[in-house]
View 1 (cartoon, rainbow, N blue to C red):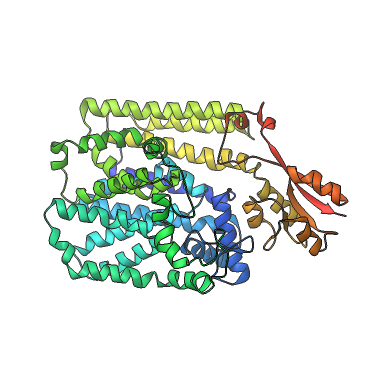
View 2: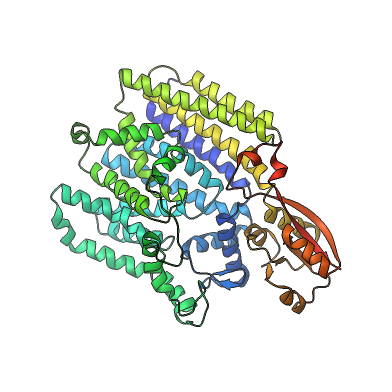
Length: 545
C-alpha cells in the first residue's frame, strides 16, 4: 500500500474502532458483566445512587463509579445491553487517545499512533469490548493520571488537578491499588535518574490531597450504606465498615489473602495470561522486554521511558505475587506493554524484521486455523460465512501488505485482530449467549408475560435474568418464603435440580425450558456439537397453577 505510514496507522485505528463497535450490538454476558449491569439497573429503578444492592441485599465489593457510569447511560438510552456497553467502549477510545498523546510526547507521533493501534487491537481489549466489566475504565483513568502527571513536570498546575481527578476516578472504579501503576513508575524513574528531590515537591503532595478530596463521593456512599449501619450482615458478619473495606480489605486483604474475599495465587499466572491476552503482539512484546535488560538498548531510549516500563514491571510483579488473580487484571498495564512493543518493532530492520514479519504472519495463519477448527466443531449459525470471513481477512492482509516493512508487520497483525473481532461479535458470542439461560428466560418472559413478577427461586447465579427480566426480580430462598408471597399464579425461574421438588409440592406448568452452560468456562465437550448435550444443564420458567 502506497500510503504515508502515519496516515496508514490512522486508517487502521479508525478501522479497528469501527469493527470493535460491533460488540455494542451483542448481549450482556454472565457472570460479572450481567452482575454489574443489574446493579446499575437497580440504581435507576430505585432512583438510589448511593446504596448498592444485589438480589435485594446490600452488596460490598466494588466501588460505585462503574455502576454510576452505566446507570447514567441507562438514563439516556434506556436499560439495555447497548447502553451498558457504550460508556466502556467510549472510554476505551479515550484511553487510546491518552496513550497516543503520552507516547507522542515522549517519543514521536509515529510511536504514539503505533502504540494506540497495538492497544486497541490486543485480544483482551477486543474481548472486553464485548464482555464489559470495570477494567477498561480503570485502564483509561490510570493512563489519564499518568499522562497528566507526566505533563505536570513541564506544564501548568491544571495537569496536577486533572491527574488527581483521573487517579481518583480509577480508585472509585477499583480501589487504591491503582496508585501503584500511577506513582510507582514515577518514583522509580526519579530514583534511577537521581531526581529524588521530586518526592519533596509541594505539587505532588497537593496531588495526593486532591485525590483524597475527589474520592469523597465514594467514601460518603460507603459511610451511608455500611458504617452508619453496623447491624447489617455483610460477608456473614455484622459491624462491617465500608470505608475500611475500601481502603484495606478489598485491596491488601486480597493481596495477602486474609480478607473476606480470597483466591489462590500462581506466580506464573500472568506470564501465560499475557501470551494470549496481548495477541497478536505477545511474542514481539516478550522479545522487547528481553532487550530492555541490555544496557545498550535502554540507553537508546529517552530517559522518560523508565517510568513506562517501571510502571508495568512493578504492577506485573504485584499481580504475580498476589493470591487473588484474574486474567482481566492485566488490562491495566496493556498501554505500557503497547508502548514497549511499539518502540521495539520500529527498530527492526533487515533480517530481524523479516523474522518477525514471518512470526506475525504465522500467528495470523494459526489463529485462522484454530478458529476454523473451532467453527467446524461448534457449528453455530452461518458457520461457513464465519470461516469465509476470517480467511478473506487473512488473504487480504497478505495482498494489501507486502514486502519487508514495518507497515507490513503491523498491517497484517491488525487485520488479524479485526477478523477476530468480527468473528467474536457476529458469530461466536451470539452463539454462546443462546446458552445463557438467565438472559434467554428474561427476554422470553418480558415478551410473553410482560406483567408477571419476575421471581428467581433457589437459584443463585441468575444475574443475566436480573438484567433482562422486567423490573427488579424477587429472590426466594425457601419454600416458606414462597408460601408467604402467595405462590398461585406466580412464574418462577428455577434450575433443574429444584424442578422435581417444586412439582412434588405444587401443581405446575412448564412454560419454557432453557439450555445452560457457564459460557466463560468453555470446555471441549461443550464446544463440540456432538458432545454438547452431555454437559448442558436445564433451567425452567414454571407457572404455579
